[in-house]
Image (cartoon, rainbow, N blue to C red):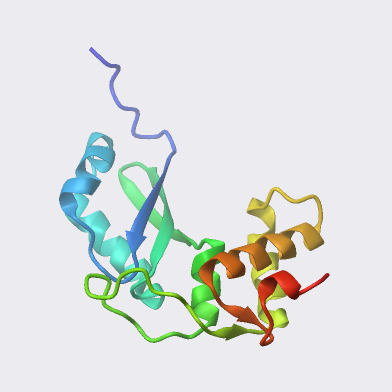
Length: 153
């Protein structure tokens, strides 16, 4: 038999969810059930925390202690770039494989790299900016009306 669950221990879970939507309870239950939490309540908390990321896939950090969950949004570089593009919300089920053809300023790229800096594997800020430029290239957007590969730092 496994040992009893210690309610005072701090447990951290990372859950990827669609912003503003209540996820499937069946996918949350195996992760959250052993911690003594209700998957339905956690789904509602996740949807409230991700309201401003409506329609985007976003990573959430779920910190659980004493059967109390705290939800923190941990956005990826791609999600931050798509949000900077200010695209309208789209229906995920109807529109597939969409190219995000928009324009982002270099100032936005630098601001995003400062947000991502502590999770980046780069040695300095220039490396982080290059990571974000590479992400912009993979998304398909432009930086100051130029291809991301032609932006030199």
